[in-house]
Amino acid sequence: MTKTVKKATPSKMAIVIAAIVANIIWGTPFKLIKVMNEEMGISRDLLGDNYLGQVLATISIRFFIAGVMTLIFAKAIKQDIFKVNKTQWKEVVIMGLLSTTAAYFFFNIGNVTITSTINSTILAQSTIFFAAILAHFAYKNDKLSTVKALGLIIGFAGLIISQLTGGTQLSDMFSFSLTGEGFMLIYGLLAALATMLAKKIGSSLNSFVMTGWNLVIGALALFIIGIAMGGRLDAINWSGLGVVLLIILAAASAIPFSLWYWAAQYGNLGEITVFKFIMPISGSLLAVILGEHFTVALAVGLALVCISIVVINRPPKFLQAKLTKEDLETEELESKIQQP
Image (cartoon, rainbow, N blue to C red; front, side, top):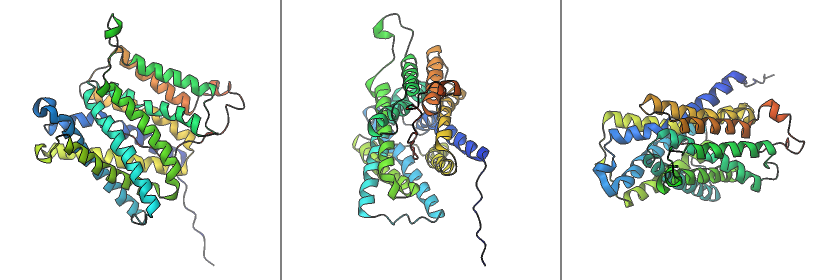
């Protein structure tokens, strides 16, 4: 008689640590991208009109490596990475073009255009707010409750306050440009749409296989766009530190996804999603460590955005007590997430 060996369930602490570490790592690319660009000689002064094309061509290599890393991991856990049918390939291509090519086209141009990395990190959290709004219209069991609406108001207030520059006239009170702050908000909307699309089409294909291929395909399309905009591989200063940073950035895409998926598999997704507030804090602190400074507006904006993330995903008990029976309806939370 053979004994059935039960797979050990990880402790709650291990699940929480995995979720926290994933969000800490997700916060690092905002500043590291700028540091890598400086190290590789990718600057507006040197490249002129070809600068943004070079930014996209270079960063596409990061996503290609991240995709390969994810596919290797999928292979290691005994997934057949080539067992993808025609319908699934179509879905993967759509996901790749939306979540990698389109979303990170706007993210990377916005990130390098905005002077303050802390500002970029705060604005990127708009994807959480857009996702909550879109889910209200897309899913019957994920409607906006009173508390969620309060969280959104707090969050958008944080985004607005973070743009205050201290000017005395309305025209110079806010820091905003289309290719900077505007592109970062467009990224937030596209990332939210990509999350919803992943929920719809991801169930028929292993998450790691889907993510690996959509990163590879999306990266190739992003590379072509970068080259068309004037980017060139021979214009990159392939220094040792630059290559190391590129690999670190690739790992910062692949590793957190693996940790998050593992945590979501064994833990309650509603409980771990609340740790998303750590990501903007992580990105902001790294920016400060590497020489940037908080302004009062950025500090207040970051605090409000972090509070809103907690309220939207897992409201404190004193707020939960105020919810109506309808508000307590079970939420359908996303099991797949793409971050910078």
